[in-house]
Amino acid sequence: MANIAVLGAQWGDEGKGKIVDLYGERADLIVRYQGGNNAGHTLVVGGEKTVLHLIPSGVLHPGKTCVIASGVVLDPEVFLREVEALTARGLISESRGTRVWVSERTQVIMPYHKLIDRLREESGGKAKIGTTVRGIGPCYEDKVARRGVMVGDLMDSDLLRDKIEAAIREKNAVLAALYNHEPLVVEELHAWALEMGKKLKPMVRDTRVLIQEAIAAGNTILFEGAQGTLLDVEHGTYPFVTSSNTITGGIFTGCGIGPKSLDRIIGISKAYTTRVGGGPFPTELDNDLGEWIRKQGQEFGATTGRPRRCGWLDLVALKYAVEVNGLTGIALMKADVLSGLEELKVCVAYEVDGARRNTIPSNIRELERVKPVYESLKGWKTLPDRPKTFGEMPDAFRAYVGYIERTLGIPVVTISTGPGREQTLNR
Ligand code: GDP
Ligand code: IMO
Ligand code: MG
Figure 1 (spheres, rainbow, N blue to C red):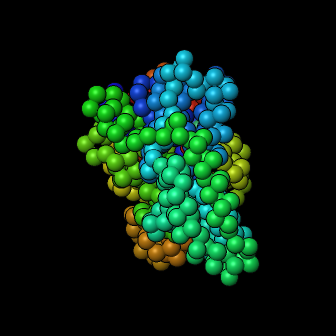
Figure 2 (figure 1 turned 180 degrees about the vertical axis):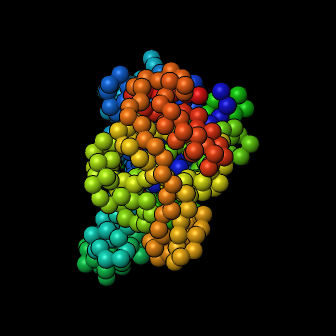
Figure 3 (figure 1 turned 90 degrees about the vertical axis):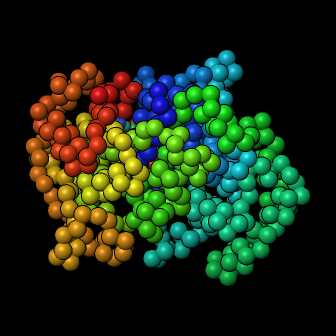
């Protein structure tokens, strides 16, 4: 198998966990390269549900090496808890051949990152993004501001103290002035960070070298994206985005490898669209139908439990995802959720201030004014639960898939008809 990237082609929660678990069976290494525990990736195997926030979704298969590369932001406590829970279930063990590695360059989500994320969100107003409040944004801010703490720093007491001191100087001023919050104490943070370093140490290494060696040895690597294309900090619906590069480019910076190491790039998309948190969503159905989709699809956040906003499939956004990621194929998820609807709509263009356009406006106010131009397609009554061939799918469903493929110019390579591993058709 070639090296594959699996990433979100919409606003996140497309079903990446399920597909990484599925494709992961044939991979040697599974790598998370950006984001943090803002992600919630759901896997359903043998009827049992597992939600992973940091550990790559290949971990349920034996014999896998799971890597958290340098582009990720790591909450040590969440990570250690996840390792512990999977170890208790016997899923991470030496006898299964499972290894979990964290890059020494991975940025650490410090307690003050979570605090600032929360205080900002609570202060409300126009600045509210509807984040997952996991400290993701403030941690990436410190990384780019060159005052972040890397996982490797947690094992160097002097360096660590200096970094924390430097990092909290401005923070204490802001905390006092804007939030009337007591100052952070270097000693407390230092002791906490050293403790985390001690616990993480056996799992820390230079993962760039590990990945490079795997490439040289011809091993198969699966890159697991988090969030989705429209949440990319540069190419998403800015400022209602996350703080990392969620697109294909994030793999190269987040792992330290070149683009030639990637053979296939699979964009995950639902047969409709969802979004959780604030920000424009052109095809949103803020009505009974949207509510119906939410119920059918059980569209509630895997990380925060918030109800997800639901709407029709947005082919303008999806075509954009094909371009910015260089997608080679689509995995179409949750097709079963739309079963029973007589008519389906897909958005084929945007209308802004009377003008038609086929790409995403960069101006957030313009994006808020977008009116979707729809094409109507026929719905289907039911789908086979465990389809074996595309031919056995209802005509209307095959027409829906055909329409998507013609519009995007790439094939739908995987179709998912339920949360379980076996409810999948690979074409
Ligand atoms: P991720 O963040 O992209 O991994 O996606 P989430 O796990 O947050 O959300 C996807 C949800 O849809 C999970 O609850 C999955 O179990 C579920 N799911 C995945 N594929 C399908 C499908 O084809 N049909 C249905 N009904 N549910 C699915
Ligand atoms: P997975 O990997 C859906 C959204 C948040 C918010 C915005 C910024 O499960 O698809 P952040 O906490 O990252 O600063 O929040 O991004 N968001 C997600 N939405 N799926 C996710 O991850 C998300 N991770 C962040 O709701 O709107
Ligand atoms: Mg999710």
